[in-house]
Image (cartoon, rainbow, N blue to C red; front, side, top):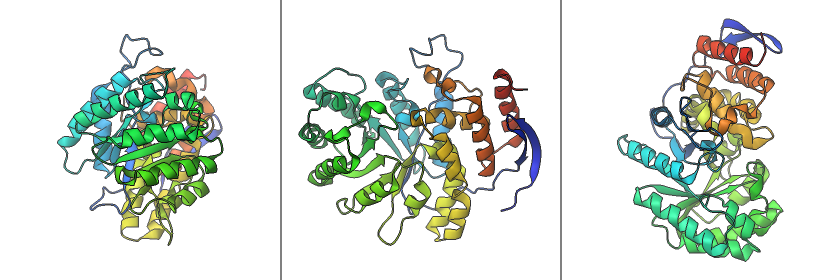
Length: 383
């Protein structure tokens, strides 16, 4: 689709012509893929809390962003790593976030929400301590009426001595949950503390351990989200899941291909990038639901380079790009993050992100986006 130039901006690489935004329509019906967006939190820039030590959240803006995602047909995956869980957002703040989001969802027809349960309020513990920590968080979420995403545990990775230790913990927790959960296998590229998860450093060997746990507890597992940024590993695991169990892609590099799938199956999605590309991803999923494959690829293909840039190494800093997009598009009035994470990327990274967002048609208000990009360039010494 041809898009006309509307204005120009001087980036560090030279003059850049910004085009009119893409035309994306809200979904008229359900998607044929389950699509959950891991949502970010909006910091409160006027708080007197020390930003490196305590999370200060703008609750109104944070909940408004969930309404934005729901309006585009996405379910919300709450209090996940996109929300800086364990990376600035502690369990107490996470539980309050979950409570507010679950309550908000109850008033919106069709709004779906799943919430992360982990062990991030404990450290330096043993297996019994890990089990107790998971039980505490799962119970708290279920008490609020929430559905559970069972997050990977740094504490378990630190204290487990073998794959059997992982099986012991997961078997125990899954035996107690009220409704089937989504299990999240977060790779070390997202969180170095999770290297060797499932008791094996090599991913294929770890996959065998994980699959055995899934098969043993299949009635308590809705699906698994794997975030390894390796499409071949995801496809291989997807084909071996128990019947009816979903594979939620967490591959922010190859999501377009994995969601489309092939004759042997497809992936549903639980993605942080959906936070940043919701309008385009929603339009693409609507095309897919209508079997308009050409439209699906035309809309979604330009978002893949953007996603790969946002999630480039060090991948754990991707949250900075997600929040930057929300600021460019007017969903928040500032570019301040919990833990001061807005400083995690350099100005050239932001400049390229701006260019790729425009290429994908995802600068909803080009004059506003350009004005804010100029602000960032100015405070970084670019004129």
